Amino acid sequence: MNSIRIKQVDAFTRKPFTGNPAGVVLEADKLTADQMQKIANEMNLSETVFVLQPSIEDLADLRLRWFTPNCEVDLCGHATIAAFHALAENGYFGLEVDEDQTFMVETRSGILTVDVEWKDMIPYVKFSLPIPEFFPFPDDITVLCGALGLSEIELSKKAKPQITRDGYCFVPVRDNDSLQSLDPNMELLKKMYEHHQITAFAVVTTDTGEQDLDWHMRFFAPALGVNEDPVTGSANGPMAVYLLHNGLLDQEKKYFTFSASQGESLGRPGLVTVNMTVKDGVPDEVQIAGQAVTVLDGVLTLSTQIPEKL
Image (cartoon, rainbow, N blue to C red; front, side):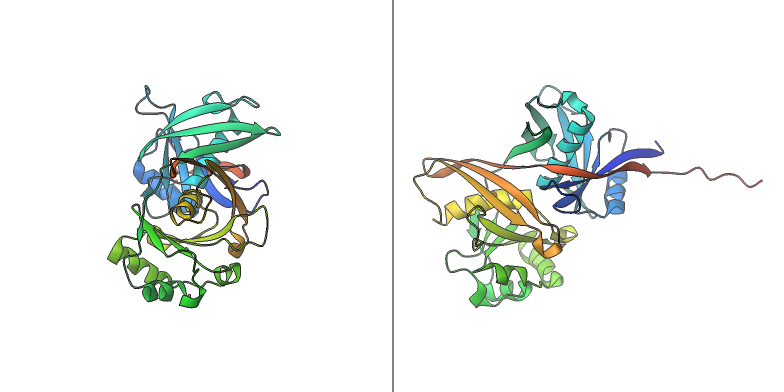
């Protein structure tokens, strides 16, 4: 295999050059893990996703693998949206316009259920995320504020910084001005990973000033090779659980739909829809959803033939 077809798809948006870009390789079965890593590094996007035939055909319809420029990761929300948008464009795996379908997707972290619906002839992709547990931040808050470039007075008084088992740290701030003016020290954030296995920082505010928008987010993951991610599905989903966990939602409601905005600070705004079902006061299911747009469709050269000297 000397070349592969590759797409670049902007997720959580319908406007090119906004949202979160992901590389998408639709036919990756003949690639080695080393080649996938090199392709992700060459694309230099926060994630590149590779679509493969499933290794467990009785349980899954297809398989996805996600790579940052530095490493393979267990899950990537925006690249999943991008992958199914690209699959729908090409009619792969039986995807047809205006025919809603559900797919079982094999991933490194288990089977992921993905629903593809259609809105105005455009695929609308949604899938459930694991429901996170939240724990107190394991260090002095002043250390966290120093790494993020925050003053303690800018922290929200409604909830405290907390971490999830998979290493995401959620940090609520009082307003959008504080959020958008953040200038984190990436080296100090990396040290949080060395000391506490915190892989990423989701800094959020519910101060949106807009009735149809529930929160703004910025997401920093230098330990994963991504200083700032434009729009992060795998963080916006857990944010709904964070709000419920901290008593910031109506405890009597059984179903919530949220709209979350991210990417403004990078000039790549995107919108994530988050759906949460609650049963007996605890989250029962969390889904993220969105659309995408393809901005590039081309061929990537993997190797070249060097002609012998005449």
